[in-house]
Image (cartoon, rainbow, N blue to C red; front, side):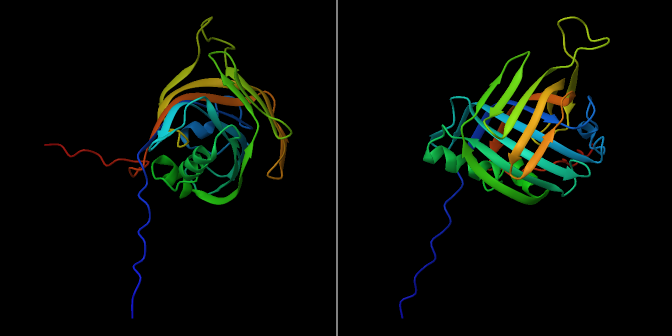
Length: 229
């Protein structure tokens, strides 16, 4: 009897994403989640945005300021297995780009998002929608009609020098791996019906980090200490 060989799963291509990430959440400004402390209210309701300036998934180009927006809820710290979220992906992405972004952000293509998937309880869904996402030094904007209205920017009250920003270096952010974080304030953070979630958290926390993410290499949150000679 002829036995058919099972076809091997296609190899995950090398990929890389570079751009700007920021969040808008319900924590007090300064966000204890930065250091894996419990959120201000014991839970997080947030909008996380990745604006991809440059990228590829194998031969599939991911340039053109494509964006991915995540609407998230969790209870506990950012390193607990607690995430419930849905992804909104830029409708301008073509079929190949949509498949690539879905594979990357759902953790199917390795890298940091595979480790992130290990901390996830439930994915509410993936939707391809029209959105307007822009980021410069002063304003971090995300607008998904009928779902998300968000605006963040640098926090400059009190003793921050004029024209400068408050930064934390090598902040341990699991969404984008450690990076240089600009402390910000959410001028607007409104979610209406996105994956059944609703909130309005004006005047709360926001943070920005430039990211450079790669895969499918394995990723771990902690590296072993080097042994002394």
